[in-house]
Length: 82
Image 1 (cartoon, rainbow, N blue to C red):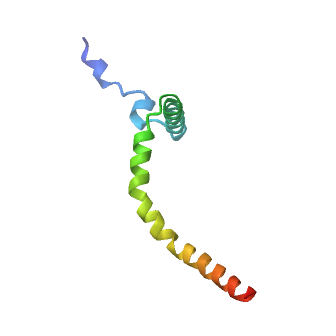
Image 2: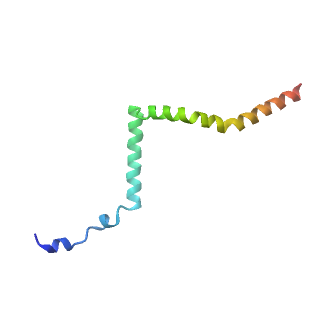
Image 3: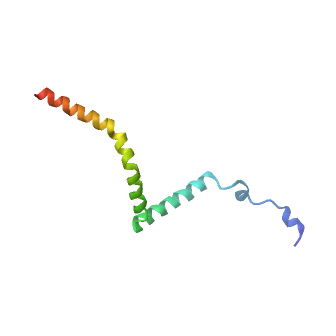
C-alpha cells in the first residue's frame, strides 16, 4: 500500500459534519418513527402515567390562584343576586 494514499483528505461531508438540513431531516425522520411506534405499541403509556403522577401536585399548586379567583367571582356574583 503506497504511503501517498494516507495524504488524501476526507470528503467534505465527513470533514465538516452533516449540514443543518441533513440534521433536520434525520431528526424529523426519527421523530416520525418514534410517534408511529408509540401509537402502535403504546410504548410511552407507563412514562406518561408516571409523569402525570409527579406533575399533578405542581399543576394543582399553579392552578390555585385561578381557582381562588373563580371562587371569589362566584361568591361576588352570588352576593349581587341576594
